[in-house]
Each structure stands twice: as structure tokens, then as C-alpha cells.
Image 1: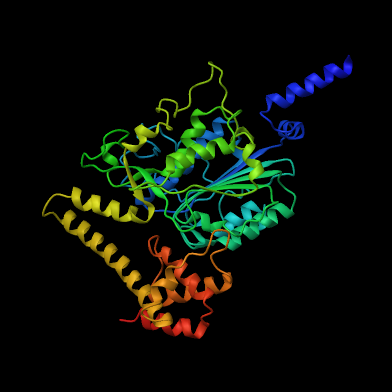
Image 2: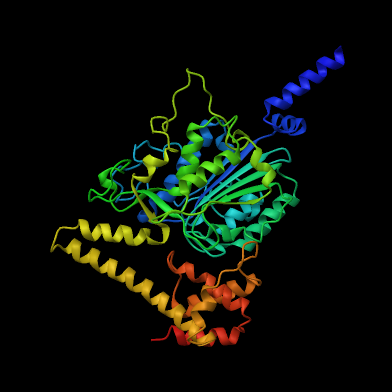
Length: 467
């Protein structure tokens, strides 16, 4: 009789966790501390959305029960009090205008938002930190980690306000973190153009890391809730004073608005992936393919294991996002606000400034000058890279070689030291790669893959960018 009762209890437990093993269920219940690292890797008013994304992420994690001591925030912090901000001291991440900035810890701001600090925070190497709060990811073997990074990117890289995070360096840091035995499971959400290239063919299984990215390795990601200021927006329109900027990023607001309204106790990472992928899906005018990497078995974990769980008690104050309509209404979203390719957000901003300036004014003249300068710089880097390809591979083959995309599961480049060196060579002769210009890192990677020697690269780059 006793054995029968025990069997029925175990069977009940198994059924209640939706097919997970009893071992996994018991492990979930004994999970240690939840940690989070949130990174906005850009600066400048036209990049408003990245810091708004990170602030929103902080708010939903905080409401989920994570403590400030376990949430580490990287953001340049030049948006809330920016002279162009129509709502000083406030950031919003959707058209309904709830402030997500208040209370956000400023652990690493300004020049302290850099790759070295990011890596040292993950590795809990306090002696390697420069500036900032000194807060590190001091996790233990039973702890779960959530990392969210939003920024501009390029093939094999994501940006920082100064410098670049290369994919191989990030993967090596994650391997070291795993080898240290200082976490149980990790989830990494990445928003950037070509974000899939940070993990594709690089992240091995067995690290207990589950990743989703905003786009495939050869695809741009998108800003959303972008202010048009000219009446083209039908619903979910940003307030008119936000003309020219995007309040959020498409993949980012998809996962956060989903987390705001779902029951995190029962919704799994895989459930969320499906909804994010559906909302972000590429179509004729905008969108990207959300990707998954790493240990897929973690995708059955419930969101609360990484993001905490909002109480359903009626006595609790509602979330500031609670008044927003359901973000998963695809029909509503498709007719909502403008979505802008992340590579074009600066032009979107500059065009808005020009169109909004009084006709014949100095403001119009200056806005037109800046817009033409930005367009000229884009044309210049495109032409320089095209010329470089022709010099190295011939007029007929140059573009084909530079634009070649490797099959899925194969990393961007074989020799990362070559890529880093050749990017420096290109920038030394042709100028710093902007958020737009970083798309050409694929071409530089293909130059490395083709076996071009350093001396030949230097000579060709100098010639391609002269005059």
C-alpha cells in the first residue's frame, strides 16, 4: 500500500512538470541565486533604443525578484539626460510611455562600458576591472545566469562604445566561466545585426548555455517603435516628440513584452523562442530570423529560472508594462509603427532632423550637411571595400569572394588573429568602421580565409583607400 502511494506521488510530480524528468524538477527547485548581466553597447541619441531595451530588461528582472546586487548593468548613460530627450530623466521602450530608467543601477557607464570590463565581470575577475561599481558575476555552482546584450553588430563582432567584442573572445570567456564551475546554467539573449555569427560554429555543446540571437549570421536586425513624425504610423505610434528615433529593437521588445505578460512559472524558453521568432519573422519589408544555439535541452526550462517570476497576488502593484496591449497580437503589430534596419537608424534620425527643420533655416542647412556627410561616408567605405576586392581577386571575382557566406555551422573565419589584424589594417588606411561599415567585416574575414598574406593586404588596402 505504501509503495503504491509513493508511486502515485511520483507520478503526480512527473505530470505536473510537463514531461520533465523528476531529476530535472528537483534540480529546478534547488536552484541557487539568479544573476543577470545587461549590456547596451552603444551611445548617441539616435541609438536611444539600446539603453531603453536594457532599462526595460532591468525592470522586468527586478519585478521577477532578482536583487540589485545580482544584476549588473552596462550602459553609456548619455540618453536619459541628453539635451535632445523631450522627457528629461525618462526612458521609454514602447509607445505607451512608461518610464523604465528610474532605479536602474549604473554599474558601468561611459568609457567603463568596454569589452575588457564585460569579460572580467563575467569571469568575476575583480582585479581586472577598471572604473565602475566593481560589481562582478560572483556566481556559485548552483546559480543560474542570464546575459542580455543589445547593440550594433557585424559578422563575428558586436560593438562597444569604444572597441569591439569579437566572437572568439566571447566564446573563450564563456568556456572559462564554465571551466571555473561557477554556474549551473546560463541563458544568453543577443540583439545585433549578424548576431548569429557570434555563436554559429563556435559555441560547443556541453557548456550548459542556451542562446537565442536576433538574426542569422548574415542578416540585419531591426529597430522598432520608430517615430516618423509625418503621420505614416497607424497604431502603436511613438509620441510625436520622438521623431527620428526608435524606442526599442524588434527582437528585444518581443522577448521583453512576452516576459511581461506570460506566466514565467510555466512558460518555457522554447515557448518564448517560438513567439519571438513569429513576431520578429522576416517578411517582404522588415524582420529577421531568430536563431538558437548551444544546449537545446535547456530550452524546456521555465523562464522563472533565469528571469524570476512576478507574483499574481492582487495586492501587488501592477507592472508599468501591464497597461500595454498584448504584444503577441501579430495583426496589430504588422500595422503598428515603423521598423528600421539597425544599419539605417542613423540615416533615419538625420533624415528626420532635415525634414523637420524650418525651410531655409540654419537648422535645415546644418541637418542637410550632416545627412549628406553620413551618406558620403557610407558610399566611401562601400567603394573602398569594392576596390580592395578587385585589387586582391580581380574585377570579376572580387565582389563574389568578399560577399561569400559560409554554410551554417561553420564559423565566419578560420584565423581570428588574422581578422583582427586585417580590420586594424583597413581602419588604419580607410578610417574607423562605423555601425554601417562593420557589415564589411565579412569581406575582411573572407580575405583571411583566402590566404592573403599580410604584406599584400597592407599594400592593397593602402591603394584602395588612397585619394
